[in-house]
Length: 313
Image: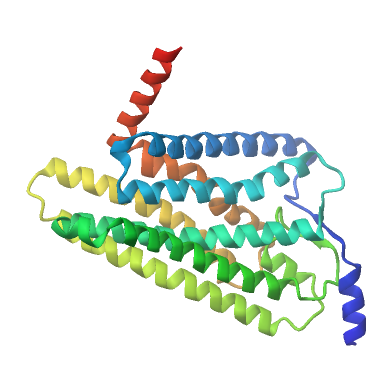
C-alpha cells in the first residue's frame, strides 16, 4: 500500500486549477474585475511604500508597520491574482507541482505574517493613545523591528510546517483543484492518505494564529475606545472613532473570511472561493485606502511628492 501511494504521489507533476464555475461570457467580466482590483492593489500598496520611504516625517513606528503591511499585501496578492487572471483565458488551467508548492508556501507565509503584523499594529495604536508619554520608550526602533521580524518568523515557520505536511500527502484521487489557487482544503480533497493528522495540524495552526492575534486586536481597541471616550472634544472623539471603526472593519472582513474558510466544516466549496476573495484581493486593496490614504500625514506627504515631481517635469 505504501509503495502504491508513493508511486501515485510521484506521478503528480501538475494540477488543474478549476477556478470559478461560471458561464464563458462571465469570465471576461471576472477577468476585468480581477484586473481592476489587482491594479488598485499595485497602485495603492506601491504608492504607500514609496511615500513612506521618501518622506522623513513618516519615519515613525506606525508608518514602519504600514510599510510592511503594504509589502505583504502586495506580494501575497501577487502570488494569487496573476495566475488566476491567466486561467480565465486558458483552456488547460495547469499549474506545475513545483508552482503549486511555491504558491502555497508564499501565500501561507504572507497571510500568517499579516495576522501577526495587524496585532502588532493594534498594540502600537494602544500604546500611542493610552500611554503617549511612554510611546517612544515602549515602541523603540528595536521593539518595532523585533515585532515585524517576529511576525515574519511565525509566518515562515507556519508555512514550512504546513507546506511540508500538505505536500507529503499522496494525491491519487485527482489532479483537479476546485479553487482558483493552491489552498489546503482543496488539496486535501485530492488525497487518498489518512487526513486526520493533516487536518488536526491545520486546524491547530489556524486556532493558534487566529485567536491570539484577534484577542490582541480586540483588547487593544477596547482600551483605545475607553480612552477615546474620555476625550472632552466631540471632534476629537469622532475622528478617533472614525479611524478605529475603519481599521476594525477591515480586520473583521479579513478574520471573518479566514474563520469561515479554515475553521468551519468544508461543505461549501463555491462559497469558500468567494469568501477567500476577501483576504486574497479585497483586503489588500482596502488596506492602503483605510490605513494610509485617509491619514492626514500620508496625504500631505503624497501632495509634497506630487508637487516635487511636477516641479522636476
